Image (cartoon, rainbow, N blue to C red; front, side, top):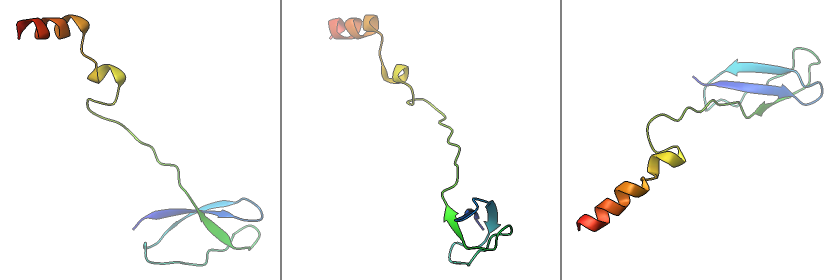
Length: 71
């Protein structure tokens, strides 16, 4: 089950809840008791492998000129 982050509309208190993707619970704030709304969570992205940097797709100028002269 995914974890969802909720933020209070009035006081800004944050809380993380674990529930099914199909559930739509009414979450109330522990501090002030008002309704909390689901917020977009922070996601860490890690790019692994080749092709993510500008130097990965660039060929050196010496190898490009030797390839064209050998044809």
